[in-house]
Image 1 (cartoon, rainbow, N blue to C red):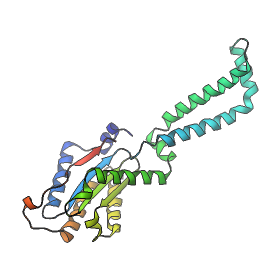
Image 2: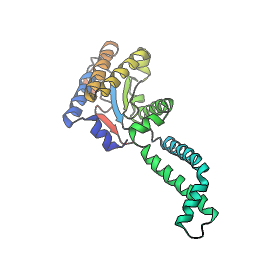
Image 3: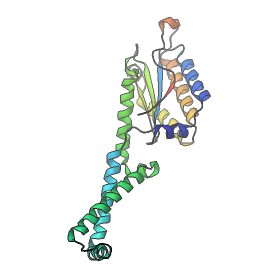
Image 4: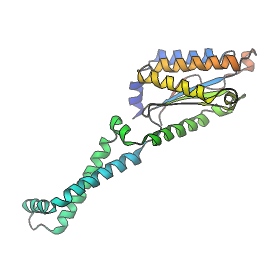
Length: 233
């Protein structure tokens, strides 16, 4: 899935992005917690799996054509003068190349692609990409280690919520998984904005209970971006 395709599918307008950003700012006020939001079209290219599936499919097709070698050879004889045995080999190679190229393009269609790639591969890819962005965005190095990443990978239909040490010392992982599942359910209903707003609100409840602060804003700086980031790769 491409970046432009993702933009169309999430269906968020400028005012939606603004509303999400304001919700993050409101949630973070009065607490030492920090929220980062990100969504990506897919967590990995999966080109290996698409090519492997196309190659296996082409091999199976060739296996079906081998018993027809005599018929194919006769057919080639009707097309070419002085047909040689290697023509048959060339025919199989050309057919194989065309089938692999065609199926590779076909298997890049998201609906088909999602059925080709094993679930455990997609789950691992999403976890790895989320952890990578957790580092890239600086969520891991907030002053009190109370940063949290809400990460959505659209193609895989997966949501990851990764919390830093300060949060994990007090909050059970089951809560993050529950929120992640609710975000995924909202996105499945085409309610991307509502899914993020719900997650922000629930994180705000956790922050207010466990990490309240009454220090001035100058002593409680906004350490991470409040905007929903759409990753291009």
